[in-house]
Picture: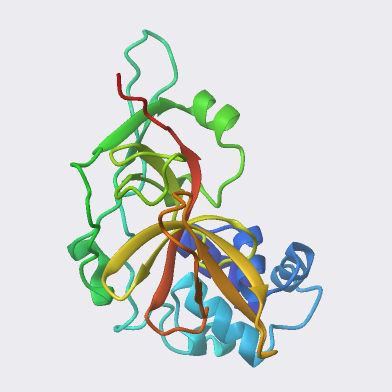
Length: 243
């Protein structure tokens, strides 16, 4: 099996797309495609390690083909059960898609339990049509990476309120551009706007963590912080109004 074939197998195993991989390792989608199709050489050792970490496979297997694709110590659990189809209530209509909640407990393997402060209950699932997803969420890394997170805490008001449903793409594991991300620092979970800004010390970039609520000031975060982990990117927010 060639390097490109192993890379494609790793992509299929992870459920992630070429675009997400390209963003994770800092290469173009075309460059990733050329490697998969055998038009260019394998990734460098550094990019091979990044790709293996992002795709949750054994980096030695990806580079050489030796050993197993997933090592015994490599976490394989998805942070939420993958969305699944359910029969539509409308006779003759295509099946619906059930998108389930993010698992903050045992499904997170070696990373431990995730604590979400001020979470006023949870939304267990959404049931939508494939047409709704196509029209309202055209860009994501794959259906199997979608899950629901119930909004928690007041720091992102007025973007959303505690208890509001958020659609999250767990295939996004790095901050490549400004957006709202679901992340953890240690065992604490957060949902914040994140900006990439130049490191004042000249060492790459820093992340600026921003709340929409002005009562919560922004703060810096190094993407190299070993306790910082991006769990996904928020794609869609439904903001409730209380009457």
